[in-house]
Amino acid sequence: MQLTASTDIGLRAVMRLAAADQAGDRVTIKAIAHQVGASERTVSTVVARLVEIGVIATTRGRGGGLVLTDTARSTTLGTLIRHLEQRPEVVDCAGPPSCPMIAGCRLRHVLAQAAEAFYRELDRFTVADLVAGSAGQLLPLRARTSHRAPADAEEP
Image (cartoon, rainbow, N blue to C red; front, side, top):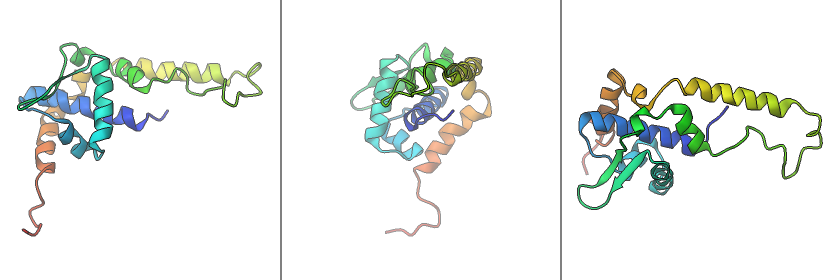
């Protein structure tokens, strides 16, 4: 099963924010966009969805940024991905165009069971699990170094 680019960005944003909580850092949409290689507009759309589902809170103005909500760390990855994907089924047999084999086909049911097994496995892990140990320490460090010019870059 392949996740959408929006879900990928959403998961990376949540991981970065979870690590920032541990480090006491402030994270902005611009910083996340830079880190994940996406436009600020795309990240803004994903962040808006994360705010809508109650995972992220935003603060505007000087000193503002993004933070995880109190319940975000205990949110399971399965729950988070279900909300971000917003796809009820792996395949859309009803169309358009609708599948001519829909009446006697078992594929839809088998794929639905496989998708549920995928989410059930992801439900074993929380957002906090993603940044436990050294992973949580490396994410903020990587973010800081990715904003700097390489040491061998020429000065203007």
